[in-house]
Amino acid sequence: DGFRPAPWLPGAHAQTIWPALCRPTPHVTLTRHPVTLPDGAVIHTYWGPERPGPLVLLLHGLGGDAGAPYCRGLVRALAAADFQAVVIEGRGTGGQPGRRFYHAGAWRDPAAVLARLPVADPRRTVHAVGISIGGSILLNWLAATGEDCPLASAVAVSTPFDLAACAANIDRGFARVYQAYLLNGLRRLLRRRAR
Image 1: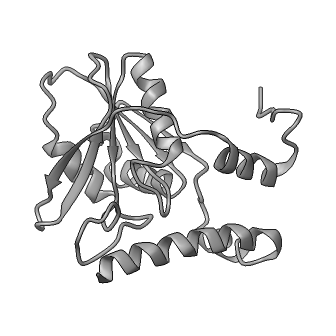
Image 2: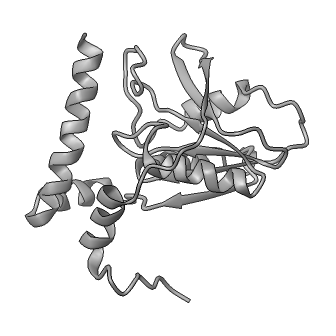
């Protein structure tokens, strides 16, 4: 029926800023499991509370990681519905060493992680949710693998479909607030990596 924002959050800026500043980070236990990829890179996965239902992979947004409030909120909601949530951190995040970072086209990393996850029941279906740039990665994965994709379903949230247009838009007007936020996060990531 279409998106209907809360009446007290009119406009895209209010709907973006309010949850980032005002919504508390949900408490949920995450268990880290490193996964070594074929090229030797190590990707960290963070498993939510153990549940018997389908496996749901979560791909975070630019500058995010498993600790992001939206990731923790999704993990908690999925656990409440008996889904097993697994957050896959992108290359270069969470203090992981490596030669390169994740990007919108880096779909081979989550695909390789999935192939190495210790899933006890082979009949367990696998689904994925990608947020922001994680949504771009997910959609690139679906496009590249087509019917061979092992995912039973996929959800892309707040996905920048046209990266060039998004980059131009974030460099204008009030959107520069978001640009500064993202760039500060990326600078912190690069400083940690340089150390």
